[in-house]
Length: 75
Length: 252
Image (cartoon, rainbow over all chains, first blue to last red; front, side):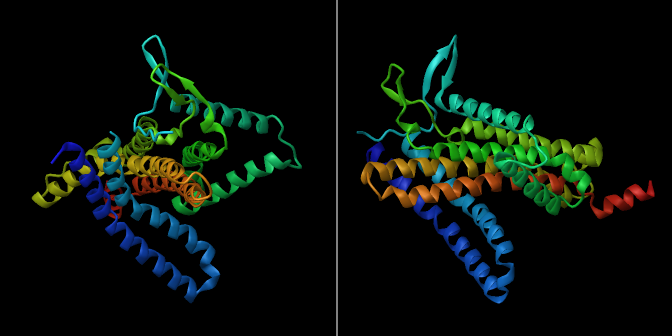
């Protein structure tokens, strides 16, 4: 295969596989946060920022994959 | 129109051999704007606050209450607060200023074609890396100040048992990984937002890029908050004295 083809394949695989984990993780966080809000709606203003922060942290592994992808494509 | 995306910032001109990049110009612009706003508020403080003063007071009061709730005591919060708030406000301003319409249209010719004068400051890895170094080095200094130099080294080099030695080595790797994870998180999010915006603008010029702009706006605010909060949490963890250490100190 040519270098460009391998690069495109590698970039697609890197971001595709790397997105699985954070997607599942963020789904779990969101569902748990919704559950908590449903059980106790008064604390929703406290839970929402916490949810965003934990989501951003969970997202970081996905972002690593994204950085690798961008380096492969444009670096 | 062609899509041009580069990870390194574009060089606009040279001062002697020092390359001046577009993200450097942008970050200096943000710094000066923030300093000017701060001075403006500082010298027009009134008992009955105006609009600008109200916003500044709101930011400072809310973030101080947040810092205090995380770190525990007022005394510690007063020490950490300036770093936390500066990181938060600077990153937030740097991220939000890129949403000013029209600034991407300003281009200059640097000899290799037209390049944009402004570039999101946090989409330059050098900038983010330096900010991360500041926060991680501060964490180490806090740890040394709290535990003392030998207590600090003892955490990493522990010869009591093979397991503790191994855990100490893992701690060293953990500290180094902090630099990478903090900086990659911020850089990746902002740079990905820029790339996503550019690609969408390239594919469909009207309306379609708007939802992605909102997504970028959300991540701009959240990432500034996350970066500052993680720095705060690391400092809090470093400044806590563990129980067995308390026993040791009491016995001495």
